[in-house]
Amino acid sequence: MENTSIITQVANPKEEEILSCQEKVSQSNSSLKKHRNRSIFSPFFCCFRDYDAEPPATNNKTCSLPPPAEENSSPPKPPAKYLLPEVSINDYGKNCVVIDLDETLVHSSFKPISNADFIVPVEIDGTVHQVYVLKRPHVDEFLQKMGELFECVLFTASLAKYADPVADLLDRRGVFRARLFRESCVFHRGNYVKDLSRLGRELNKVIIVDNSPASYIFHPENAVPVQSWFDDMTDTELLDLLPLFEDLSKETDVYSVLQSLRAR
Image 1 (cartoon, rainbow, N blue to C red):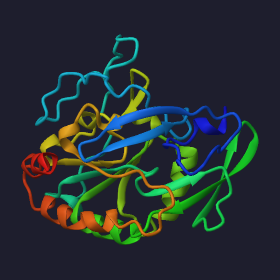
Image 2 (cartoon, rainbow, N blue to C red; image 1 turned 90 degrees about the vertical axis):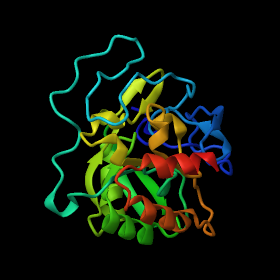
Image 3 (cartoon, rainbow, N blue to C red; image 1 turned 60 degrees about the horizontal axis):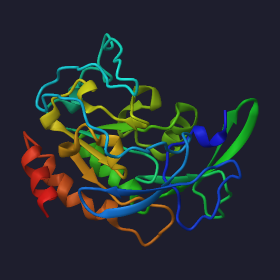
Image 4 (cartoon, helix red, strand yellow; image 1 turned 30 degrees about the vertical axis):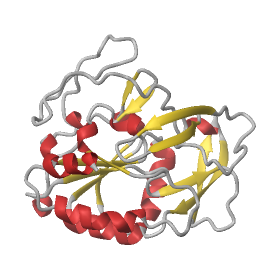
């Protein structure tokens, strides 16, 4: 397995090359917030290649579990249970926030980063590789507040062997009630998609925070898009989003607020 097949992320435009075996694919993405140009790596960091994939028909305000759409258009049987366990007593009545990892909360690279916050060893085909992880500014404050307001779920298209130890270091307070990795995504037309209807939560109470529109292409109306982050230590986006999330935490139906956000 190539090390680029373990982490799901977009390319840092400042980095000419992270690995010699890495293929850069330039994509133009349209988010609900801004137009962004991105270069997409193969699977360890990211494999979002087809942003115009059509989502399957779903009822946005129910917890029904449709069979996942797959690239070969032959959907498998639906899973026997939802991705998330029952809501805990402490989170009862709270809305659910699904939070992405790479380029949303952190930036990771196999290329050494002098100011890395974490260095995580990852074993690939019998060889241990060091992954250098940089935390986005204000991520600690952001997660602490989100944990107070919401039922928080980490959902990444990266593999658990990388993302789980990163989450251990990042989430010292235990904000994430659950962690979902690549195997929980739906592989749809070349993309790892986070199908929110498979969580087991009412969709009008679910919000996804992600830098990649392809990851929430089935449910764009549930998204709070964020800019991809690499190494800008003056970035304040996570801090700036807190007032919005304070408002969303009070809503019994998040769609009205999110619709207003898309209209801006």
